[in-house]
Image 1 (cartoon, rainbow, N blue to C red):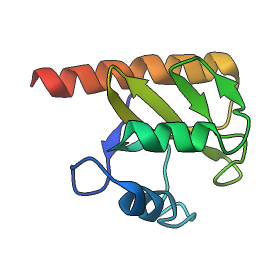
Image 2: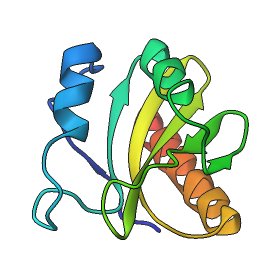
Image 3: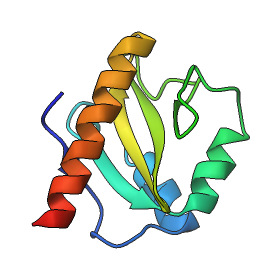
Length: 112
């Protein structure tokens, strides 16, 4: 995946804003693979401890409960920054490739 689109207001989403963003709606007009926002490390930990993850890389995981038939929320730590990314439901390998691409995207945005 190469199309990553930041949603939200561009600030680090706290508790209430994180929940508002993940509950933004479940139809294709509101939720698409590649949409992401930055959140807090505490929110990463919160979601990691709710349910066992479907895919787990240590620093990134996919929620075991899907958001839609084809999408799930992934939570990614990059250094001390935490992100939520809508990903297509797929294999562990697909998830690894998506995370790799997302981290490159975040690094390029930081360098710009």
